Image 1 (cartoon, helix red, strand yellow):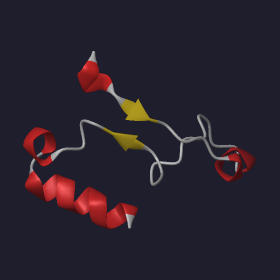
Image 2: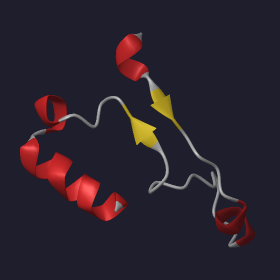
Image 3: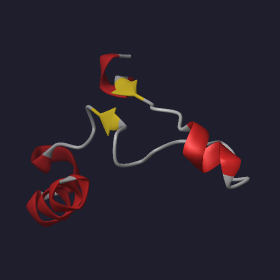
Image 4: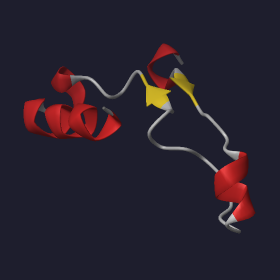
Length: 51
């Protein structure tokens, strides 16, 4: 299951807003976010958003 490797970051600030699960998508990462998996355009957009 190496392709399912990911890091999920939970945020107290997001939980305080009443949003559950309180996953912070900007700090979370996934091995699947790879240009060969999701395509170059999607990969580049996701990386720009994370910056």
